[in-house]
Image (cartoon, rainbow, N blue to C red; front, side, top):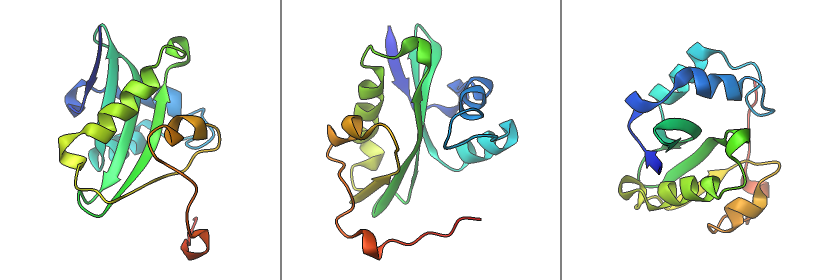
Length: 132
């Protein structure tokens, strides 16, 4: 049975860090850093028969803005629609229904997020960033 939960006590931090430490967007992230990001985010775990197979988190103020981050499904469980189930759970989460602006960054999953209404920035020239 597949379930999605926002209960942080169910998250398998070691599983999450093991995946993130080698992926291009989070390479080298320590378990302490992973814990800090979880502590300060609205998190979603996806579970198959109560074993975690994926993760995502949202940084938000619950009204104006939400940023979707660290979305993944373990490689052994890809191809079964689990990422779609995870995103659907996030987009339908009652606590996030007032959010007006959702953003994310992806290099390889545009097709997935487009199904949920995400598209290229309307005015990228207005966006700025600082990377340290």
